[in-house]
Amino acid sequence: MTARVAITGRGTALPPDVLGNDDVAALADAGRLRAFVESNVWCRNRFAACRANGDATADVAALDRKVFAAFVGERVGIVQRRVMDRASVLEHRPARAGASGSELGAQAAAAALASAGRAVADVDAIILGSSTPESLCPSGAILVQGRLGATSAFAFDVQAACSSFAFALASARGLLMSGQARCAVVVAAEYFSAMTDWAEPSTSYFAGDGAAAVVLEADPAPRAGGMELLDTLCRSSHSENIRTGVGGTRLLRAWEDPAAALQAKPGEDGYRYFFQNGPQVYRDVLPTVDLASRDLLARHGLAPDDVARWWVHQASLPMIDGIFQRILGKRPTPDLVPLVLDRLGNTSSCGAAYCLAEDPGLAPGQYGMLLAFGGGYTVGAALVRGT
Image (cartoon, rainbow, N blue to C red; front, side, top):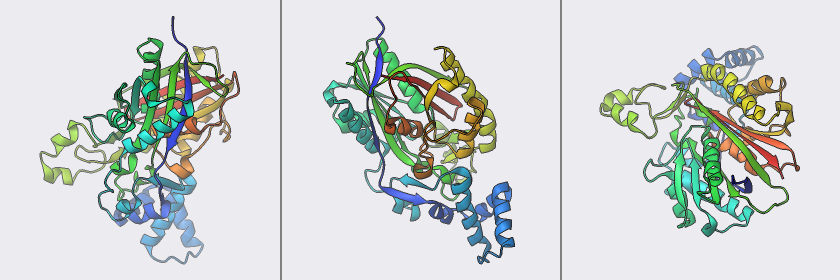
């Protein structure tokens, strides 16, 4: 008999440090920032408007920083982001000892277990979804397991870029439905600021750090405010338009020639930081996400208007607006599509997970959908129903 899978606990964890848009603008390389302002239509128009309106800032570099900070806040939708170690970013030095995604992940997992009323000894599986694992071996999930002291559990990572949490949910659901586990903790943990080139204005403004977790149980006792995980859908296709040099052998190969690697530009082999070809990603991802969400809903005889809450990857306001113009034909309201982008930034796989974990809950019979998309390309969706 196939098990019924439910979300019985939810938790989050954030680092205390905050980095504002003025901070990010100040970190940008002046030459690269000048080129960014000149190439970006919004920034170029704002710069000209400031000049035409007699802006007192005569220095071009200072005005570039002012325009850039406004662009990130008004156009992208990010006002600030949480980071593991603000001082290390501003002072261009290594982060404090112990700063890691697994630290945040274990905190979120512990909060989710407390919410579920479960002890660490009850956990059979820990699955970590992350774009920024601190090592490939041991995996981030095993580091979370060690921090929790979950000695009776097995643990593994799922890496599907910003869709990692959605893919991890699908993996956990399969384990529970097949009877290989009864209780699983699914974690999204991101140390995005560690793989950010703060001198590069085309990508630096995204980064935020954070973690979120849920407890999944097979055939749990009914509880008020619970959510049943009805179904998941995962898709992927090859693309190099979102890349990072963190981890893997590609960077190691490139660093066999240190001189060449030091000169690597964003997107090239040897470039050790996050890179995204934003305009192309926007064009490619929107139809894919739209189709995936509709296909998952169609399995259950549902339409987009039947969904009461969408927990979506916190990529940027233009991306979120573009997706829901296709799915719903309108810009969504905050009660329909909760946003944490303005205060947390883009936390990669953690964004949708955080929105789900912090949600006040669905009424019995209401539907919710977690929707994520990212590098690869990957798309992950999960359909839940309030109990």
